Image (cartoon, rainbow over all chains, first blue to last red; front, side, top):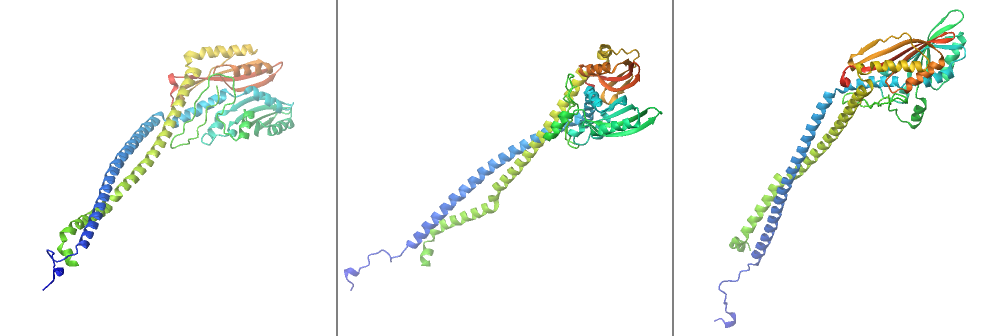
Length: 247
Length: 186
């Protein structure tokens, strides 16, 4: 017979369910955390995706606007016929340079170089010709030069050569080129070309400062100014040369 | 031990199933969607840099158009204010040159007026060529007056011959006239 102390009062035999409970709890916690993480990820993806698409649409619309504006501007540039207009501006700048040519200063400088035995017969500045030769190149301080055609009469050949030496020596003149000489026994008639730098002082200043010249025309007292500048085109040179000073 | 898990499967299988589903969902997200937002961001960045390029190009074009318009306006102004048409300026120009010559003591007796059409530029070049007798001082004064005048007068060349007591001078002047309003030869 068993004693009262040995009585087993449990309804059923003892079963240790704690491992099951622990595992179940752990699984619930992990599943819940992962669920929250998944929901957050999907939420963030959804909102990021919506914002990104909206941003992309906005940027694409802006790009389309830019493309359209660019097309309109290109059409306008096409209608302006830039190359023709640039040629026109070059031509007008040459005329302005002719108008602004400092004849008085040239005469003063010629007086400095003409020897006693030489007399001028004719004087023609060839502004257009020199310009066209360098129209496509970058214009610098040296481009202000003008080719002068001089015809003169000398008492003898020595006086003529002295004039050429003086032209070489004078800062306003460069590369004198004797073209023809004819003697009639007592005098010598001759023709020469020389490069003349009309705006010597301001050119020298600009050169010292290393600045390119804006215009080709020297200073003048004449009136209205022309603000015609060459306009760079996509295909050709974009180096705009300013107008030749004032008229 | 396993018997008890088997016995109480209803307790732990549901959270395990949920966990598996969560993991499957996470894996699917990583495989299918995780890069989408990054790709979208890259796409936006690429479009933004394209937009920047396009804006820069448009600005350059706008600047070019502005310069071209300014240039066109300058040409029009020159044609309008300085050149004018022949009917507007010719007689005034001739009168002015004669007055300046007389003021300098050079009175031209014979004058020729050759003209040349500059069709490409919508201009007419009219010259004023005259021989005259006078001193070197008169010539310098005339040239100075020409430099000071407001009109568009170009001295193209000077020819001088000595003939006692004065010089025999031949002067070639020119001016430009617009052939039509705006002078759009281009």
